Length: 186
Image (tube, rainbow, N blue to C red; front, side, top):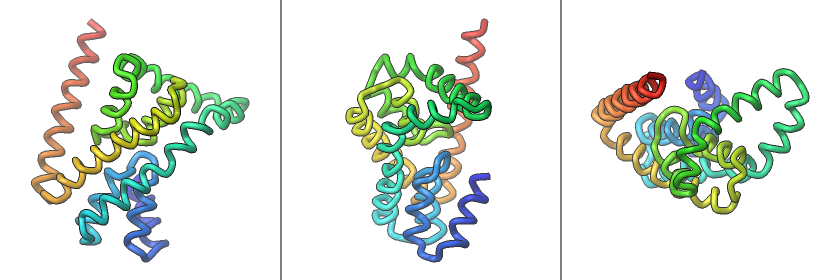
């Protein structure tokens, strides 16, 4: 689905910088898709892509930190809204211990690791749902986005080898997470 959204943005807008910027703002894909798109597909300068992607990725953070709870409270009066809100709360609860144990450092590390399910959107939603200080959360998320941007840029500059390395890391981290989950259940 995220590929279709990126294609829609690409076909609607013919400015490669603007496409990269908009893709970096999108949930789920964020700068993890925007940076490879800018570097590998559009062949833009990696510094320019990094700056555009980081700025675009940070734009939704403050609105999420301040508006998520009021908006979700409003929509939770409907059945679909309530289900969505409960799903968000479960996700926040799942990460609560890790985030609260290290607070802002934990939030920063959560956002900095460019894996599926992490990123500025998820970090901001977790911070809002856990009622963390919005200003400190924004700073932690920003640092995490800067780090994630460096990591994704490095992998993108490595081309196919970067994709292979990222794939290996993703498989290893998935296996470790699965092992951890199995051990907790036993």
